[in-house]
Image (tube, rainbow, N blue to C red):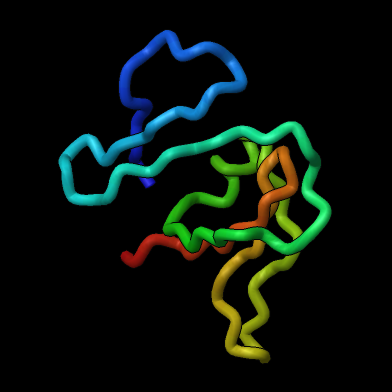
Length: 91
């Protein structure tokens, strides 16, 4: 998404604000919780990005695109198990 951390030095385990550095998007708070994922995500992100770069950052592919079903995106999970969809950038 291109967002960056707002401020520095927040203690681990505390909520962290992330912002769009060009001011075009909303302020988003990332709030860690002690529990592991046990149910469907409460929020789901769809992003444009490079699947291989995301793999290098710790995400894993759980579903490949399927042209026969009209699904042009990858479904991935971050290291904590949160699912998100990745679309290849246009161009």
